[in-house]
Each structure stands twice: as structure tokens, then as C-alpha cells.
Image 1 (cartoon, rainbow over the protein chains, first blue to last red):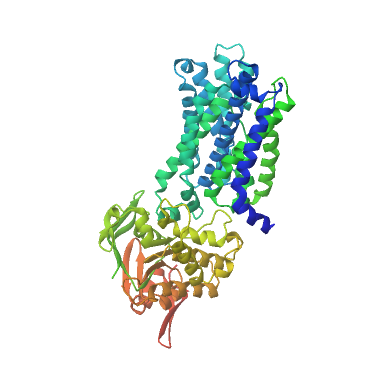
Image 2 (tube, rainbow over the protein chains, first blue to last red):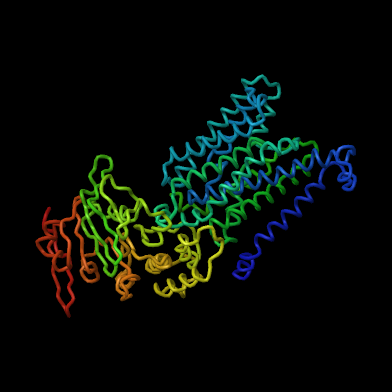
Length: 332
Length: 265
């Protein structure tokens, strides 16, 4: 086992990148229609193959990669910041707050005024959730306080989403609600990619730049500060980074659960528990997991009724239980 | 000679006067024991010196330059801080924990350079934890763990070490070991420019008497007495401040005190 770990130490990133690339192209080839790649690349606008490739499959899989990476990275950063393996953007209520922000932007007309409204609504919601979490639980929150605060935030936000959709002049409110609560990547366009990915990219940069601070936080906040880090400023940078990642991702894909919890936890032993190295590998791992989930969704439901969040919850829920059993000592 | 000086430090938190016009000076080549009953303000003073807490009034200066004018990284290279209880939140490998001591030197570099690796190896050897380098820090005993955290501090190559109760919860063997390592840091070099200095909070009067060049006795946020261990750790003084009687021992030119009985309440 130690030998495998030693190899993984050096080869993990190339391995993840290779798997991600392979899965990406595999996912592009999946779908109800058999694609003629040559025709799709030669005639992007005039052939049916071209339209399917450029307007249906590519945006969907690009979003799967970017949203997965954002959620994985945000999870790793939150777990590092709170020094707590049970933290995750969905469990702590950040995702559902972002979803509410996006719902409000969408169904009350702001999104019609400017395309910025949707991602901004999501980001504002996510930001509010993270700040709220800090206020409620304090800086030295116990695991239990955080999780309980997350449950409360989740419950309140889910009801607000339902309430907002009920009051909106929208005949499809119920199915829309399922979309926001469970998440989906179906029927996304290149336009959706353009609207959301730049925000996520800024979030990635902010979070990746905090790696060394997260390493130092292993020894506690005071020691991190004594190692030359300005803890208050860096904490804000992480909060904003998480809000950008989760907010933009949720605004475009709904609330896809468990990626941010499961991925960092699975990869942590393979990077020697180092928070900085966990960041980039969790981004790649999140992208891989969401691509996989999306492929499964497409296999299981030709009609497209199965929501992505169902699959990630089916993987993540039992995993979360397993985690709680393992961490029982910490919770008491 | 290097020095870390605090002048007329006062700290008030929630209307409690934690420190009241306290002045201390730590010079290279000496190890100072900061003692006093619980709640005397020892940790607060240490945090002020470590640039973790800005005092309400008074100034701290490193080599006569105000702490406000020194960047966090620069200060981190000169002064290292060992927090009370010193948590380790993830099961990192020992050598990775020690490598964290190089963070103030890294800047935008991604990889450790030869100088970093040299400093880490020296630190592992100094704290006598080189044989533990591949262990996970969470699997170590309390004594081993404290030595690893000291190695982390040595890896930063600081002039001054500020340690908050480094020997709490250690067995006698490891208490002596940690105190020896700290004293070594202050006494090792003969060159004044590279010689280190240590200020450590202690509860063990015996260790304070045996290992420290100077003792600062703090009570209710004020310095009550300061100087040579024999001059500070006197029976009347300890009775007044701690409410205890002590037995003093003088053996082979070494001085020690043992708490004996409570005298009040």
C-alpha cells in the first residue's frame, strides 16, 4: 500500500488529467444519436451532426467539467478553511442559498434585464450563506454546530425556493423546483457556458492562490498567522472564491449535491493530507465525478427526466453516512 | 545584539484589563521563563510579542524597529510562535509538518529549494525526530509530537522563539528534553548575531528555576518581579502571589523549587 501511495504521490495529477480527458471525449460520444465526428467538425452550423455536437453535447459536457471542478475545489477549500472533513458547500447550505439567489433573479425578471443577473444572484446567495455560517457558528465552530447550522440553512432555503416558485407566474413551477433542488445539465447552451464559466474561473484562481495558507492552517489559525499569513484577508479571499465557484455553478446547473463533500475526502489520502495539493486534485476529481454521473444519467434516462443530483446523492448519501460513522468520535 | 522589546503594553478586552503597562525585553542568548498564576496575562503578553494581538497602548519593537513597520513574512522569519496545545488538524507526515516552517521563505516559489531542504534536515536532527520523518503526526506520542512542532519552529530559523506552555502534558523525560532543546537554542551559538533567544510560558516552577536565565513573574496583568531565578522564586514572593509554600533546593550549583503546600484558603 505504501508503494502505491508513493507512486500516487507523483503520478496523481497526470493520472487525473488523463482520466478526465478520456471521459470528456467519451461523454461527447454518448447520446441518443450516433455522431459523425468528421461532419460535426467540418460543418458546425449546417449539418445535423454539427448542431448536435456544438449546441447540445459540447456545452453540456463543458459545463459538467467546470461545475464539477468548481464544486470539488470549493469543497476542498471549505474543508481546509474549517479544518473539517464534513464541510461541503451543499451540506453547509451554501448551494441552496445560491439556488435561491438564482431563482429570485430568474423568476422576478432580473435575468431578463441582464444576463449577469443569474450568476450574480447565485453568487450573492452563496456569499450570504458563507458569511451567515461564520456569524452563526463563530470561528472555532465545532463540527456539530456547523452541520446543524447547515441543516437549518438548507431547510429554510429549500422552502424559500418552493415559495418563490409558487408565487412566480410560471406554469412549470413544480418541475422547475425539481431542477433547482436536484440539479441538471440538460438543455444547456454555449451561452450558458459563457455566462457562468468566467465567474467560476475567477473563483478557481482565488482558491488556488490560498493553498499555502490552507497548509499553514493545519497548525491552527494563530500559528498560520505567526508563519506570516494575514489570516483575516485570506479568509475573505476563500469566502469570495467559494461564493464565485458555487454561486456561478449552481446558477447554471441547480443544486448538485455531494460532489464537494465526497471528492476531497476520497482524494485526501492520495495527496498525503496536504490541503494545498488537495485543491487542484479535487478540482480534477470533481470534474471526473460529475462527468461520470452525467454519463450514467444519460444512460438511465433516454427521455432526460432523471436529474443529475439524484445520481450524485445516490453516491454521496451512503458515503456521507459512512463518513459520519467514521467520525463519530469527533462529533461527540 | 538582537532584541525583542515591549514597552508599556496595555490590553483591555471586554472591560477586563488583561495587561497593565507591562514592559519586557528579550535579548539573544537568553531564555526567559514567564510564570504566574492562571489568568495573569501570560498568554496575552506572548501574543502581543508574537504580533498576533495589537495592544491598546504601548509598542513592540524588533531590533528597535516597530512591529508595525515589519511585514508579516519578515517577522515570521525572525520570531516563531508555539501556541498553547498546538493543534495539528490533518494527519500530515512529520517531514511535511516540519516543512511548514519554511512557509515564510517561500514567497511565490512552488518547490522547496536546497536551502529549505537543508534547514528542514537540520531542524529534524536538532529536535531528534529525524527517525520519525515518515510517520503521520497524529500517530505520535505527546512528547514526540511536541518535538516535531519544535522542529517546525527550528526549520524557520528564527532568532526568537515564543513558546506557550511547551511542556504541559508531557512526561518528565520529555519535559526535560523539550526544555533542553529550548535552552540549546538560546545558548548554542557564541556569535551574538546568530544567537537565539527564548521566551517561554511555564507552570512548572522547578523547570523554570533550572532552565531559565531570567524569570518574569506576572500577576493580574502586571509584572510583580523580574530577574535571576534565585531572586524571583523566593518563599515570600511565591507565598504572596501563588498562595503556596515551597521547598528550595540548592545542589551542585543548581537551584530548584518544589511547590509544597497551599497556604491560603
